[in-house]
Each structure stands twice: as C-alpha cells, then as structure tokens.
Length: 484
Image 1 (tube, one colour):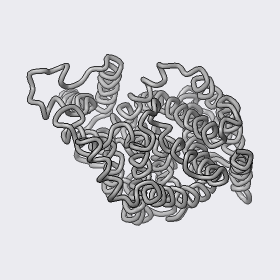
Image 2 (cartoon, one colour):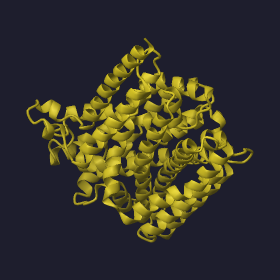
Image 3 (cartoon, rainbow, N blue to C red):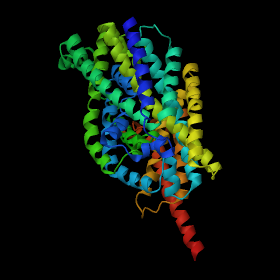
Image 4 (cartoon, helix red, strand yellow):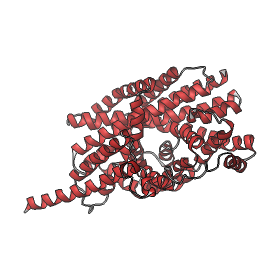
C-alpha cells in the first residue's frame, strides 16, 4: 500500500516539474501561452489530440460502461475514428484561417468568420458552461483513482486538492506547452498500462480473450449484443454520429489544433489516430474481465481499479494509478487554460476592446485558479446539477458544428444571424431535453421503434440546422430588399 502511494506522489511531482520546465526558453505571450506560437509538429499535436481519447472518463468510464452495459459501450470506440475522418478535411481549413488572422480560441473563429462579436460571446458562454462540468469530471475521476490505487491511504478531498494545485501551477507557468509535455509522459504510461491490463487480465482470469467472451455469453445471454429496443443499433448509430460531430467542437480540442506548425499535420494525424484509438479495445477487455469476477459492484466506474487491486501487487497498482492520475491532469490542464482564456479573451476582451494581448494573457493566468476553485467546489460538494450539465455538455458543443462547417464554404449562404439563432435554439433544445429526461420515444410515441431509439440529441441538432437555414435565408432576403 505504501509503495502505491509513493508512486502516486512521485507522479504528481513529476508532472509538476515537467509542466513547469516546458516553458524553458519561451516568453509566455498570448499566442505562446495559448497555442504554443503555432509551432508544434506532428508528435506534439498528436499527443494533445490523443489526450482527448484517454481522459479519466475513458479510463474509468469505458471500462465501467463495458462492465455495466455491455454492447452499448462500443460507441466509445467508433465515434473518434469518424471524427478523425472529418478532421482530415475540416481542420486544415480551420488552421489556415486561424493562423492568417491570429486567432487563439474557438469563439475567435466564429466571431471573425461571421464578423460578429456577439456570436463570439455566445459561443464563449456556451463553451464555458460545457467546460466546467468536464473539468469536474476529470477531478472526480482523479479522486476515485487515487483513493482506489492508494488503498484508501489518502482521502478523496486531499487527492483532488493536490491535483488542482499541480495543474494550476503548471498551466499558469507554461500554458499549452506544459500540457503537451505532460501528455508525452501520459501517453507512454497509458499505452503500457492499458496494453498490459487488457492482455494480462483476460489470460490470467479466463485463459484468454476468446474464452472470456465465451463465458460471459453463456452466463449473461445478450449482454454482448445490442438490445432490440432502447440502446439498440439505431441508438448506437445516432450516438456515434452526434459524438463524432462534436469531437472537435470542444473548445480545448480546437485550441489544440491551433498549435500545429503546418496544415499537413492534421492529415498525418487523421491517418494515425484511428489506429491509436484501437487501444481502447484493451480498456474494454478489462471492463469485460470484471463482469463475472466482480459481479456485485454498485459503482461500475470502479470496475477497472477494483479488478486491478484484487489481482495485482501494490507496486503494480501504483503504476496503474499513476497512469490514471496523468489521464486527469493532462486534459484537466487544457480545459482549465481554455476556460480561463475564453473568459479573458472573449468576454472581458469583448467588453474592453482596447485590452492588449499582454493584459489578456495576464488576466487569463489570474483566472486559472478561479476556474479551478469553481471546479474543485463542485467536485467536493457533489452537486447533482453538475452531473446533469455534464450530460448536456456534449450536446452543447455539438451545436457549433453546423455553423462552423457552413463557414468553411463561401457559398453556403449562412449568415451571422442564422448561425447565432441556430446555436441558441440548438443549445436551448438540448438543455430542455436533457433536464426533462425526454427521449424521442416519449416525445413522439407514434413513431417506429427504430426512430424512437435515436439519441435525443438528434432533435437538437435538426432544430439547429433548420433554424440556421431559415434565418439565414430570411436575413439574406432582407439584405437584398434593403439594397434595392
């Protein structure tokens, strides 16, 4: 137990020192702090984007989803691959435009593309609302990992506070470079740990992966296949589609893309990242391995660590925990920096148009501990509202997709009013559907079962697209009449 805690502590110290050291030789102006002066090559951009695959949600959630739900967990494997195909075509255009106009945030792109500061403010507000619960998720996962891997030798509160301090210090010090260099350590560790666990545990506990699935299929018929209704194949397809469209719409993901040295980095990444995502299979294997060995778990998210603690010696548990800690710190640092940047650049900057870049980056650094303190508060109080907000977060950011794609085509006909109305309506519908716990079936019970099984976020996205098209057409017509 002691050795596990020592390894966890050393990992936190290592991440802190690595994050602080990343600023060496660089002056942290606005573009340097936020997007690394657009100087990252294939490897660093790859690691920043890969950081969106392996977060605490994936480390705990993917294994826990496989343990608790079975086949529906497959969507986590599929949506990223589709997102990378979209990124192959979309991200080079976004990067070129961002570099040309010195943009450093997602709202910058919308505000500049549509020549609408008001649209930039709306996007920034939606982004911040989505980011805070996502940061809470990372801190919550961090606490779970440290408590489990440390055999309860350190409390959840202490673990969360230490993680928050580490992230705050190196984000203020090094910005995106700190995140990039800690991502290097994280991915080396997580690859080693996930591959080992996904291969070793099925062999050790069942005699092999095939034997494991054979036993599960016999003990729990239907667990490994989609249900005929509810979380069916149609639910899977619609959920994969929605999450794929929203993948790069998270503001910290788009900010990671701004860091690239050249546009062809994204095409290289799009070819490699789907292969890298296959490593998620081994996370699934761990969750499935726990199905018959730990049948009575009340909290499915603990499946991976409960199985690891029951199977491996303390020093090995410490290594697994260390990898898990880094899955919280790396995305947590990007989320924190992005939320602070949005507030300083796109809210305060819109209010004070004379603010210099130096003033913006100074304010953003000051806001980093504020953002972290808010996230820590919600993490430690366990506010149920945050859980609901987390569910709507992905639905929120996905509403940026239609307006962003439309902006990449000069003859799309999308107007600033249409983009603004589409996002507002889409976000409003997504929030209403989530907070009311509605489904397509409950809203329209007369529809065929396949349609009733669709992810409810489809309704919000359709509403967004329709409003975008209608309002854009109306405002274009008004502009033509005024010109006459």
